[in-house]
Length: 353
Image 1 (cartoon, helix red, strand yellow):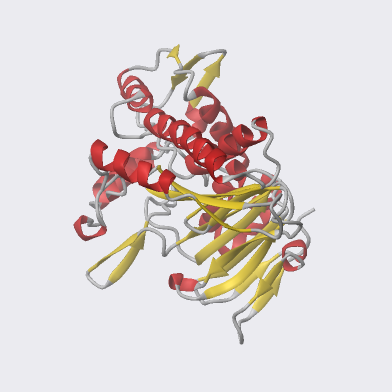
Image 2: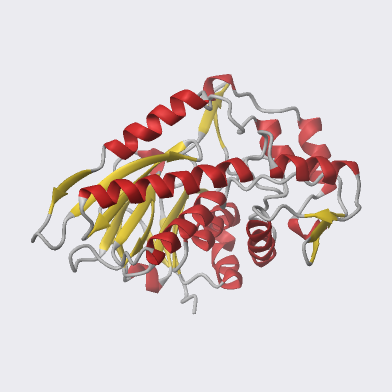
């Protein structure tokens, strides 16, 4: 549930003020950490070689940028995306795309087509039907089968959206955009670019077990833990080399229980229900945008089809844990990951290159 604006602003200011100097090997390489609020979550920033005062200034800039992007891309609050969805629903006539949304729309269309439409931001009606748009888990219930069938049979996809210059249109009035499976990655990539413009060479931004980093941490690689099935314990640790991102799509992140069954928010657009077969997928990629979208697509593809879809998307590092607890990965990912879980079946695929 979204907090009132005053509470969010108070939390944001507290997050910025919480940046502290946590230690260093020398006075030239301080480590500054801070937290910012955006996209209904908390993002942690780690800056190397930046003093406390400068770190506070940087965090303030990034938070302002992130919250501006959140307002622009929000799927159901008043704003550019909501206006686009209304126009898609009313007519198939072209209209000018909001400049704040057009770059995200373009990359989403490309990645959706590469993923065989498994990553599909056009199924906002399904997300709305399932209630994963701002409602707390205790209030969620499965939608009616008739409603799901209506959307699935209409087959909304990013292929229905035509982009000609700065004008867009949709040939399918059921298209409703929701960038939930890519917007955090895209926003974090933009934040990293902003840091690089500020001449910062060593930094990371992380949220909900996902991480995008540049450079190193005092000469050592960054690392990110991958949680086990159900979200308990640490399944593995993945090292990040230089300019890379690791994103995980998992059934445990956002879910609810109803009549003894667990429903998560990674919806298979082909059937309108939560995808089955996988419990988590971690993707390593040079940018967070692709890693974010691909993790969702490969989760939906599941143990049988993840390898084919990963090749189509140009992904080189994948680790998938299936619903039986078996770990699937390609040889290149095997060389990058350290498994902590014992007695777990590991299945190594053919190379992805």
